[in-house]
Length: 361
Ligand SMILES: [Zn+2]
Ligand SMILES: [Zn+2]
Ligand SMILES: [Zn+2]
Ligand SMILES: [Zn+2]
Image 1 (cartoon, rainbow, N blue to C red):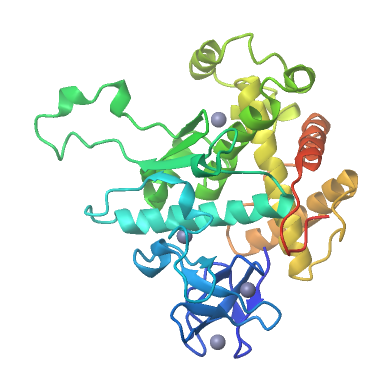
Image 2 (image 1 turned 180 degrees about the vertical axis):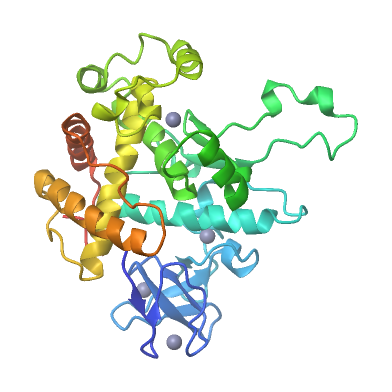
């Protein structure tokens, strides 16, 4: 991630909706891919204040009306946009029930995490599209909650399997249980599952990893993937899941996997490794933009690994100084590095050129 600049000289951050110094409305311009001050346009809407861009913009409906977004849509001057949702919100299939207290705040946290991951996918040139685009595997999100039988009298016995909302991915649709957007509940789950980290951005990365397995590997390069992660058809996913919850991970999981959960099944190994790769790339990208060093060119995978380990141990010490959790909870062991190398190559081979923006080269 990088920071941006307001016309008044103040620093703007990716999540900002207003400049704290001059009070300008700010938003993300999809044309120059920057967070910019928004100037009112005489024909309605806004103008991007980046002098080299100047695009005419409309605020995303979820920015203007729902206050959970800060992205804009590029629109020809004086014309209505074709869609009223930005290139992040247009993937939403189901949003939380907004008449319930606290749900708007949860939704906002989910959107903040989703936008950050999308920013990274765009940086990497990973393709995505929804049903309206006619995309081969349309991507969509549903943010749902398990009905609470204690607040809805008489519905206890209706709480069958279909009503328990599980965070997961199925055939392009990513479901997130919105309880994950409650920090207290998420921390409770982190401790219960003995995880080193549990975050919304991590959930999006993990579920998108499953999405990219279906998009890029399924029926295309399953054999190659099998040689790296093991046979995803044997044992079956359901057998592996049952075994994992009965027996737990192998004692020596840390010698071979990015996380304990990665040892459950080759699909989870892929997803956790993909997540670790995105964490590395995001950390290195931010470090470079914040002038903290690191490789300037992201083609040399081994240089990325070395820089990430070095940066990780430095930031771990910073975090310990502040009483926070480690950034990099354990060193990347050679088998994990080799699986990440496969992910690196997979992403490089499917990169799509982005319009008018610096690509991640
Ligand atoms: Zn300002
Ligand atoms: Zn712009
Ligand atoms: Zn939006
Ligand atoms: Zn998973």
